[in-house]
Image (cartoon, rainbow, N blue to C red; front, side, top):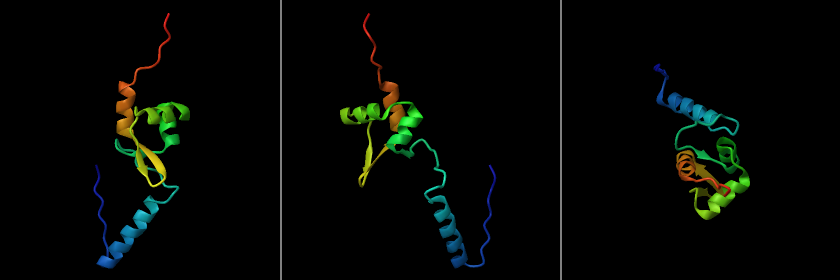
Length: 95
């Protein structure tokens, strides 16, 4: 792990540096930080866990996968999706 030293001439220069840095990080095209509790959109969750949008919607309706609603958007926590996936049993054909 390396340390980062930031030198600023004044507190206002430091604040401006932080504003610019956060604006760059939070830009729409910026890469997302992937942590265990990061929020995923429906398409990101489907792509990451290899399921269809229909399956995810059914799981959402049936309460299998918990979700977070922020305004009109729906997000899924990565850690809770993993828990739900581990506890889910697949449909199996009877022979």
